[in-house]
Image (cartoon, rainbow, N blue to C red):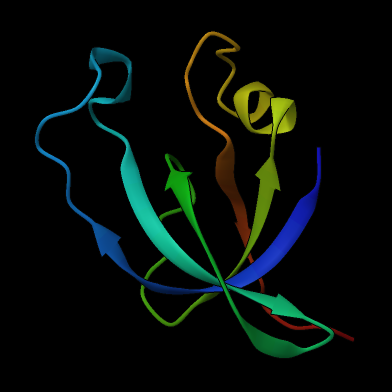
Length: 88
């Protein structure tokens, strides 16, 4: 799995989805590499962090994403695991 950093650019509303995904918040995130926003985007689930538009977040991907949700059977590949306060 990989850890990524990005900026939340918006919420994705999906009223019709798999039952396992009901109650999950989906965010569109613009990825950051070497302190610069890129032209790469990812959709990630935010179940507990409550990140908002404009915030910089940490994302885990792959099997690490499912472990972060404590449900390895959930069809998720990216999860927001933190909001960045500052980089020193």
